Image 1 (spheres, rainbow, N blue to C red):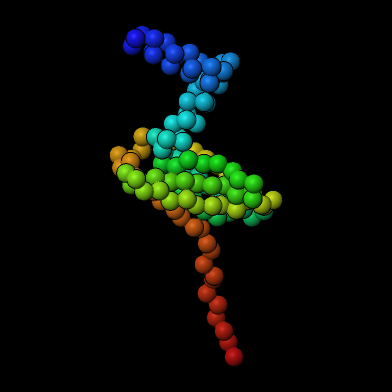
Image 2 (cartoon, helix red, strand yellow):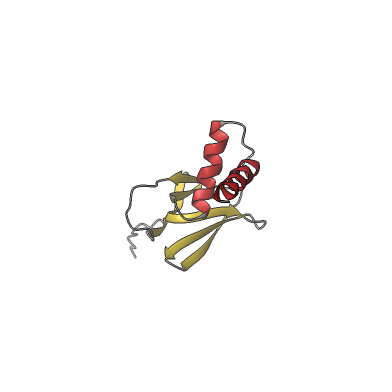
Amino acid sequence: MKKFFLAVALLASLLLCSCSSEADKANYNISKQADYFESERKITVYNARTDTVILEAEGYMSISNNSNNELVCTVKIGPDTYRKNYIYLNDYTMYVVEDITGTHTDPYHYKLYFHTDILPSVDVKS
């Protein structure tokens, strides 16, 4: 009976992952891992017109796009605690997602950085 269930599970996984190459299989598996919060990622959002970094986020997160032109980042920050962040994308923004798994031992590691330029000091003379 155990062999039957194992065979059914194997067949189901082969049917679900109708991947044609080793790269396709790896890509599928990595995406699945990230959706189960098993991969640490770093997202960097750039202003493409000014070449400046707008935002960085890193942690164990699942990423998707919605119909409102937003990047949806769901982050696991505790055993049963999650946060959902939205990053609005437009014609002048772009983002890069890096897999940085293995750099931290804390499974709930999460950082969010907003990059803003501080206005320069101005001397006022009267």
